[in-house]
Image 1 (tube, protein in one colour):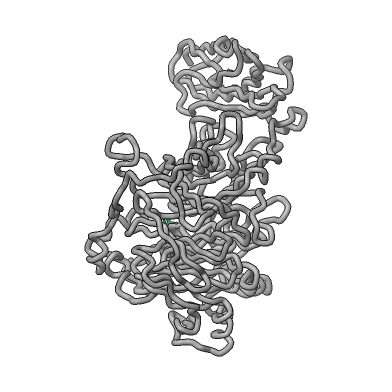
Image 2 (cartoon, protein in one colour):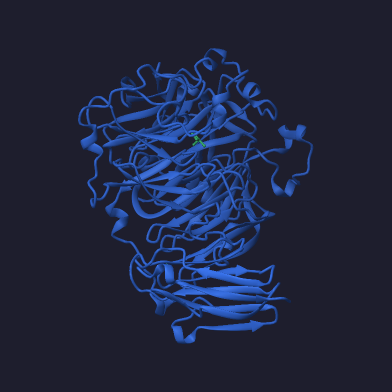
Length: 639
Ligand code: CUK
Ligand code: CUA
């Protein structure tokens, strides 16, 4: 969404002057009791966990609300030296893709698993935009449990959104692409014929959470931006915002803003799943990688998959429709009842609200205005419930307070706008600092929002914090929404750049936390279950060090017989059986960073010494009063 800062040349010259506009009174008064409302006394816990996307940082960040305190950075799509993610031999497979090892990505959206449309605290799903992937995090351990790559996809932006019982994670491609069996090596100016918008339906196992791509839909070559599942009465449907109905493949800021309306695409996913099951569709040869973490071996494995089932526009002819939506829609949000679908045209001066009941009637009555690439287009008026007039400029995303109201973020006019869903009247607005992208109410995209707060995730901070050079802190702002007027309570910095976020009452996950791993259950291939078993084993030029760590020493702690060019694997088992006693492990001159080993776990650090010498190794995590004594030496002799 950064590009929105650059409207520039576009047809909306009038808007461009307002890009990133700065509301008056930036020192803005917070209400008198704000401090009290966000103060969480030392030793007390926050009420909500807030999971915030890490953007181009590639990770997911965990905050407490209302305090805004950063609790943890969870490594997902990027290597993280803090805990050896992507550096240890066990975690390296998590970042494997069909393009090889990719140590980074651009993480935009998050979705908490749901049961009956309510957040259940089991898993958190995250998307990667650059090399299209979806991750599942296990909220018992806060670890990345699984990452699946998406074939026939580029810029996995419209993801990961979930059906209301987490049957499917849905992921729409932002860039139209030639599907793999059409051969991607085609002239770009054959865009209109060869490029398709593909949506992946990733099945999620009810018990284990394990993901697998069930099928894909090959839709017209349009850009999918965002999406949300229906709920309740609309629970069988999925809604996607689409831009670039012009099918421009160059200078999109001008050429993709020509049409007065783009589309919301409505897909009956239940029907699509039945079609896929009944043998419809074609098998497309492709290649994608599926990485899984195994909790008993404490290791990840990568599996290469070679085929995916793809449904065509023709297969989907009675299960997929376009609804016109003004103008370059971005957010696509469904209210808690499942009746109202909100499209947010970035360049529109209104917010269109569609009615699920009317959409069903329009389909039954064949109220179509024509077809777009073989997909029936429902007449705008036949699907429309109504429009919110003059909401502000640059509407992006909408969340719901559970009291019959919606709150929409306005990027250009830099504010949050609250409006009543039934009568579509704006009832309140509050400035943000500055240019909000996503916003989030705890449970605010589910059937049961918890209300209480809205958080704005802002694109620009300007004067909000102490300056830190050309790149300023990324900003979030917390508002109280319990009264008639939204009230600013708190600013807190985040990692760059935050997009979507999710939050839920802390008790839903804190009670299930794994405090340590039982050493008896450790099935790692190189586990050392007691100090007496520690040893050094040479196999050709590979050296396996079976090492243990316990407060406050390693065994073995003096190692000789290593030669330059040997491949040394330190398999370190943390023998502690207590909460919050990790040990670290690092050795001088190793490009694989370090390990941070949880109690009961085994982690492996690979090291290929390049020079003879004496190499100190030590524990990096201050684990006891004698932590500094937790050290040793490795002697490396010439080859
Ligand atoms: S996008 Cu960032 S503000 Cu990638 Cu969800 Cu709208
Ligand atoms: Cu173990 Cu410090």
